[in-house]
Image (cartoon, rainbow, N blue to C red; front, top):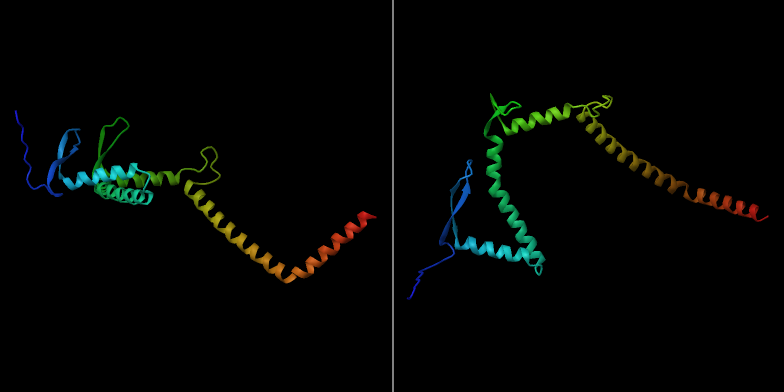
Length: 181
């Protein structure tokens, strides 16, 4: 029994498979794209390079390109998820009839968080937002004041350096002489 397989004109653009994905019910459906020989070759090269430690710069570059391609592929799904209308539900998961988007839900939760008291037991510190702003202003002023003090010290040391240095040297010598007696 002879089995003969004949393949004519295979190129990198030859389609070898359909790309499949899962729908909202978990069923496997065609994604509308096709996989070519070039796609398969690229996948094998990427897998080999990422696993091999002999070419670190190439590995970093391939990994960066892969990450960017993943971002580009996922970006439309994220935009759709954030902008697609969803129904609000109550605590039991039952729809309440109000339609919103995920981005509106995120903004509402952020507003609630910023209005919460910074200290849940004592309300002396104000809200989370007030505490965050206060802390950042404190850091900024602290850095500015530290720089100003450092500049003032350098200025004073520059102007009085020789006089103060001579006085400190004389005081140390006097103390050592008194101790030696």
